[in-house]
Image (cartoon, rainbow, N blue to C red; front, side, top):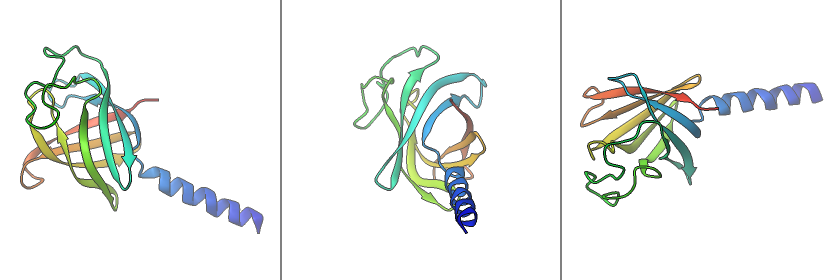
Length: 138
């Protein structure tokens, strides 16, 4: 009986950890294929947020001078670029992602595939956007 219960607990843990996106992720530019930064995704309440925890390429401007909201003029290092994602089935959606290079904010959906995240930013419907693949940092 104990073995059965232990197997059930480990199986449940495996299923729960499969869909988790919390942790550090290396961002890969979808156009240049270069690693740009490390983003740390964390949970506050029932929502997920992400901030730039390390810059791998020195930006032209170290501050988000082109941002249009409360992030305007703030340093990119430490900047919260993902806000308000909620887990819905196998995806994390309903939040936004901000591109510090352009200052634009997009709707965001994230799906996980092994040690990779597919991060999609879009305007309007999900078909009109771009997807980046981020890699887990150990």
